[in-house]
Length: 341
Image (tube, rainbow, N blue to C red; front, side, top):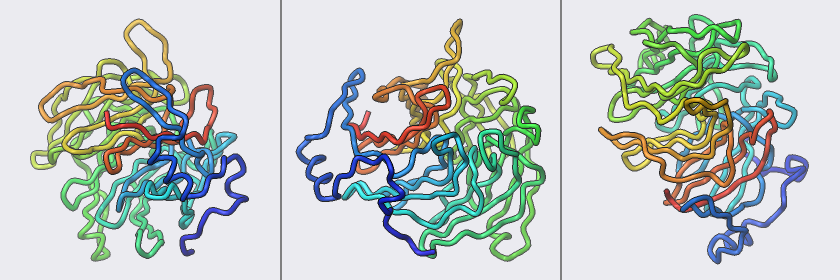
């Protein structure tokens, strides 16, 4: 399936604005502006489809969203790309399965995702592993995970793909398992997942990325369907020594920010999510946190509203946030752009 512009039918609740008009509005600052602390936000036209917990990645200055929940908390196969240059959305090849709770890893001009929940809010945990070729607009299957997992971490270190943690088939038992797939071997048609040092504290829905050559597992929660206990811990994996060490803890327990955590200009940014501060109950979070190499976490801004599992990225010096849930499993299509925190 070739890339196609989103049709009117795909945008039932979109406040329509032409790309030319949107570009002018961004230039002139005519869109509605909200102030959250020191962070100013401009409201953009809605996404073509509501998305909560999508997989996200940035390539060629464009924001890609894969899967996630749509309205009614239904798992989706839909994938779209947003171009900030003209404000346009383009629908690309659908996912092979309707999946949520998977992290995305960019590998050149290919993206990888593994595991997740399939077919709805109470869907089953899967072991599927896929890659998507941006230029060919095509998916390819890869060796299955050794067991089904949902909400685990995925990261690329060198030419090796790492999957760790997440919940088992019962959607509630946290797994310490850590598996590695050699992508060079996969390209030669003979790869299989092998075991690496397990996570020191098993959990799910943590943010995960490679930073300074090491893999960071940030926050997360204990359990999923029975209870969701947010954690502040950060664990750092060194692929050279196959060992884990403790990293700078978050200022509070935190989860549900996989698609809004990313590395930009030598810092890790994490926007929104679920949080449980000491002595408080679980709530949706508006904070934008940042971590520099060798430093501690800093509060650098706030979203225009508290959001669970939105999509977020910094592109050309501007901070974009889209979708997510304001709470109670509601799914929204709102989108904003703000200054770099």
